[in-house]
Length: 486
Ligand code: PNW
View 1: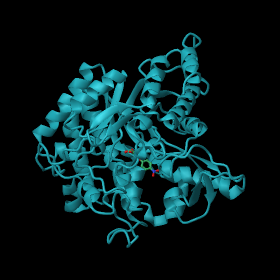
View 2: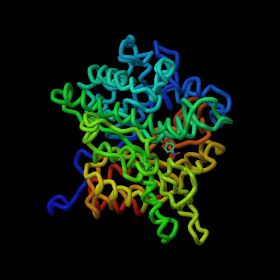
View 3: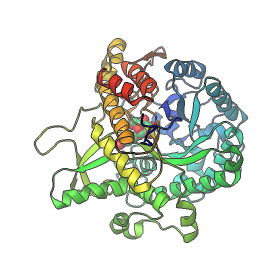
């Protein structure tokens, strides 16, 4: 009905799927010529992950790739978002370093098998696993030289896989790369000014330099794709940014302003130059000459360098003005309302509570501000205490079902009531997996992984999402399914 009236509707090519990233699932870190990534040794260093877990085995997906694709097929997904490990393709990372044929072969057969099963590959080129070789050689993202090495790596991927891959993401969540890796020091390579945590780093300067170099690397890779590959391969390329909705804690003018300040740094830092052509004014004021500048030539390449808005989002924060956290725009975050109630259901990780209205508001904000189709490339929930449950108990993940129910309703309302152009929904994650600094303690999967046996068990949330995706085309059956489940 919506189509006849010309009202907004889900695009017929809407992609339902699940997302993962190479380092979080592959394991087999020293197999088939793979080079080291910065996460290899970092995760093996005592104290860097909550439970001492590292990426050596993870969900063993490098070895179990056929089983994984069979499960995706069983779920009936239209698409699968995964990332390529740079150090499998170019073990030392650099533009003059050798390409590893075994790495190409692995992803090539993986892509072929997805396509043979009717699953569209949605490929992230960089999901945080920088080749250690480039970190050792010139400090990785801190050095502008990385642009040339990153673009070369992308070229190798476009040449090897671009005949079959039509959806490329250059980078996953640059805010996390810059802030968690070089500001707070909780992610590899662990740089920070906090000398109790690391002997190296300057949290006042490095994150802004890293962010700048990530933006430039993304932009030059897009330029390469558009000039040399897109005309024949006809794919789309863009970046995916993390960002959570913010609401003022109360209606005091400072707190109202703080909500936008936080969005300016969490999202605008990357989205404003890429979609609008300059860093947000608030960041310029806050950082002065610590914020690097683009040359006119660079800016011309940065502006408009993403074909779509790639969006990862998990939660909503209430903001208060104050504190000294520049990475949050000098705002403080809380989930506790002035009346003492919580915003939503608490997840296993401190930074995440359920709040579907925030998801809808964020979709509207991004569509209005950046005016491009949105691909939701991550969204998900970690059930509190899930890791201490039995397998059977963990598979009854009703808090996660509740989260996805709210998110799907919000998504539906954003499309059908608000007219936002949304092209995909990739819940995070296909599998429980290596959750970075949390190790294996925090589970985000819609599939339970028993790390002792590596057996996979679909959780209730997987079944819920599969049924939602089967009903999404018809708004009436969508709403009726959603309202009768969970
Ligand atoms: C994303 N935060 O990371 C990543 O893209 C995934 O690899 C990750 O597993 C997933 O979300 C769940 O955490 C984030 O501190 C890490 O706000 C940290 C934050 C947000 C996203």
